[in-house]
Image (tube, rainbow, N blue to C red; front, side, top):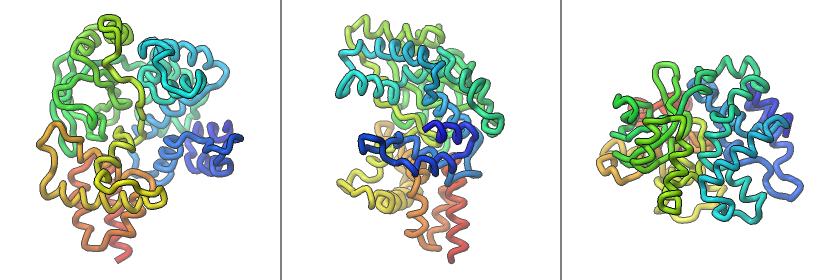
Length: 360
């Protein structure tokens, strides 16, 4: 486990995967590694030079969050306490026992992640103690990310390659590459999150949290008081109307795997795991053809089909299955997708186009 952590801290995704493959199961006979960790390491190893530098910045966030060296124990305890308080106390936590319940908070709670990485300095500490110079050099302004405050935003519009937001603190409109950060947000809904600088613009460091209008307005006025704003909602109505659990922070897409699979595979029914990549590739190909002819983007209540399409393309195994499924005549479709989708999905389409050309 420590050797895999060290490999990641060096920026060597392939070495980390190799080490993990040597111990797939833990002492209890169950899978030892978090599935989302295997997914993002596989994406890093496979997509490699196609990835923008911000993907490495997000990789550093993931490493900082899972880094549980002895010096971080107090940080974990404090972040857990705050996240559980926002959720309404330990009685509100799902889980088989106390340990399982708290592990679920650490793995999937939006508030825990924000508090651990930013308010309590988990990211700064990882950059100072664990991250190698090579890893940081490949990232995109990651040291600046550690100092970015919380903000409040309103989703204005979603397009294939760009989502448009209003900064509720300044009133400015902001266009962000559509990597799915707004896939679970409806136009006019408010969110809170951290808008971090990247080369050529900005992005959410992770999918933002949908909140009430009142919370958004309070955070816009007092970014540092965002936790108190969330606690105040529960205090007024006695229960939480803001769902902070079940969050999955992606590396190259903010669309959770369960969501994009639902969007493209829902009519298909249950699919065996061994058939998931081929079935996904086929469904994504069909969705791409539909979107390029009659895009389903005029109903704001729908899932963001473009973001789901991008997320599916970037899923490990799907692009390889696409190569087996597609024919040379499909190269034009890939070229059209490359013009419509945001990075890194656009670059992946260009690579698939080139691979098909070589196979012809």
